[in-house]
Picture 1: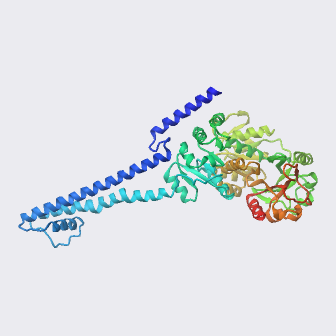
Picture 2: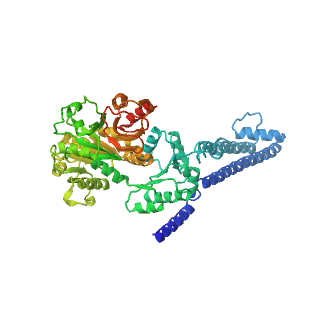
Picture 3: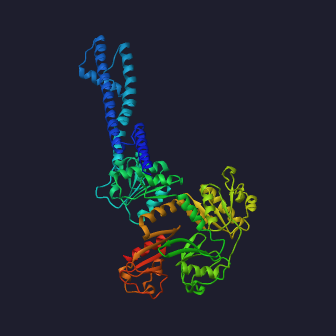
Amino acid sequence: MKNLSTHFTQMLTRGRGGAGGGGGTGVGAGGVAFGMAGGRISRRNTGMLLRFIGALVAMVTVYSVLFHWIMLYEGREYSWVSGFYWTLVTMSTLGFGDITFKSDLGRVFSIVVVLSGTVFMLIVLPFAFIQFFLAPWLEEREAARTPRSLPEDTAGHVILTRYDAVGESLVRRLEQFGHSYAVVCPDLPEAQRLNDLGVKVMLGEPDDPETYRRARAEKAAMVFTSLPDAANTNVAFTVREVTDRTPVVATATDAASIPILQLAGSSSVLQLREVLAQALARGTVGGNAMTHVVGQVDELLIAEASVRRTPLVGQTLRQSGLRDLGVSVVGFWERGEFSVATPDAVIRESVVLVLAGSAEQLQNYDEAFAIYNVSRDPVLVLGGGSLGRAAARALQERGIDVRIVEQDPSRVRDAERTVVGNAADAKVLERAGIRKAPAVLVTTHDDSINLFLTIFCRRLRPDVQIIARVTAERNVRTLHRAGADFVLSFASMGAGSVLNLLKGSRLVTVTEGLEVFRTPVPRALVGRTIAQSGVREKTGCTIVALREKAGGPLQTNPAANTPLADGDELVLAGDTAARERFTALAG
């Protein structure tokens, strides 16, 4: 292992040195090289402008001398001031007419002066002024708006190396939490564009140690890099040259890259494709009425369960008797919309319950409803790419049979469970078993195709559960309107995973739009019981667990008459808006 580490260190060091020699800005020089290059460009522009002005002065001088010679030829004599006056008036095409030539030689000379003046003074001079003076000045002013370093007292911030879909979602969440951040951007125009959008950006090369010194990486809460695997390796290795303390979280496309990234210094490596695949599989609850765990906080489990074809349909939550099983109903999912569960809420056929409880309490629920909504028919996975195959594997690990629909035969890995054909063809879906399938997973990488397939499958099977993925977070609501029961955003899941690592066990994003977070009992609620606190009514959050004093046992689903004491810790569940309302209530 020591030899491997030494070899890997030497390899990266050589790679960085070689890469640095080829670029204009210099990978190894970073912001310093940018500043030096900027200085060279400024001096070059000034020199070019001065040379042009010198040529123009020389031309005016030559024309003034020729003016005197031709006037002497015509038998007239003017002062040198008059010569310069005539030359400038003629070159600028003002043409006052107070001094004119009488001979053909003088008139030909006037034509030459007018034409050259038109070119130089009306075309070349404005262009040179803009090109060599005004434009560089404006660029320097714009560049000055983009910082090349963070203030020395910056601490506890998150450094991002890329503003992609995941980075955009993460920045939005960090701003919601009031957490400081900085996006490292090597390209000045892109940095200026992000700056205009209100993104906090810092100019610098992501593989330059000086960038992270100027970004105060030694005092940062995290460095998150979502570049390609090789670039992420370089980033992790570079950060470790600056600090050994700051966690480095890197993404990995290829599983083989994980040990290399860890060897380079990454604290955590996220395979976002696998995270999304697991989430897609967890959301598939159409095969039975049993609970499926989607998140965990200590001993507390968060699970989802379909109520289709169970005795719960048509009852209110108060009438259901679920509380007698020990589980707490956090809320309802229905056609992609999450709503807080109230005692008088009616449980409809299309509802998916979000439950909280211990493993024993969820087992009680399963024992009561295991006989309902049992389906042995395979789940359809539309799209046989890497994500579709990963989701299929996750479903099979849960004992659920699958059928993958893939148009490209070269992507087929499991011929027995794959139907080759266009998923937009009703005959292909019929052959795959759309009429009996309990659920359909739409997994292609194109949001427009996923929208089309969602609408198509909803028309073929109005009662089937549809779970779709999107790349851009802005398309989540569009897929919900198209008929998807659950929509999982690649960007949102990635940002949630990073935020979970940043917040530790204080905040867990269990699924799209649902968060579980821990907080001390607010001073305003001390001395009240859970019922008297009005947390659910005022904020939409549900108290799903309570830990008395520090280090005490966790009480899942505490009774409504449980008192809230100073020093106790609450575990609450709700969406982002509910969490923000609770924060405001806590003051």
